[in-house]
Image (tube, rainbow, N blue to C red; front, side, top):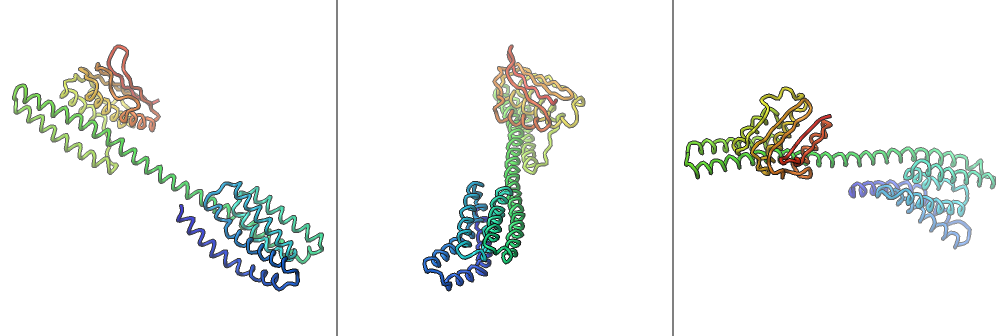
Length: 361
């Protein structure tokens, strides 16, 4: 933003110096060699210099996004200086007002720009009529009117472009934030479940070796841990690349194996065909997160999963101390469900255990 302001300021200053250099020095010279009193010449020249630099500075009010009131005040001050200079030199120099009128039309919204520029033009026309100079100044008034209208439309175009750039930057920022949230949510869901299952399997292998010394069974469990680790690594890579998709049927199968390994009796459906196809992925995430919480927190002995065409429900008989709705896992599930107009309910049951239910309306 700062670099954009600097680039715009440099371009405006260079172009403005060209326009000022074409006319203002001529006017200053004419005033300097005039036969009016010295103090009047000094005062008018000082006013011309102040007016010129004020005009060069006015567009900065737009580039640094000053409030409309500030811009109106600056326009009124510079307009007053310009009118004082014009009346000090003579109405024949009314063309000098093209600077402030064009800047006013460019930096202000439509209504205040029309009011200020229209009032200035009307004042100059009436003054010229009263002093009998309306004929000679008619061309200048036409120039003031046409330039003001042109700069008014240019100003609206510049402000629209600035709004578009601002909106584009905001969209890019939101897209980055959304992608960061997606990546964090997916990694939590994937690694949380996979690492929990690996922990359960590794613990089971340790207990087998400690209790019975059944090396073959322990080897089987370790082989499954190795396979789960490879699968988790592949899931992470797929998630980072954005190509990973969750299958409800695969999550049910994996949940059954993970629950059994942890000593939790699974009561899971054997088919998922009754679930609407467009909801199977998000319900797969629900099953994955629910099973992860059962294995981590609940100390349950039984876990039950029921599926409907637009809902999934999980119950366990544990202590009901699973992830809360403010936790990372359930927060991610709620975000996924909102994308399909769904809602999530989670909490302990009155007679013990824990309920997790997702439903799409």
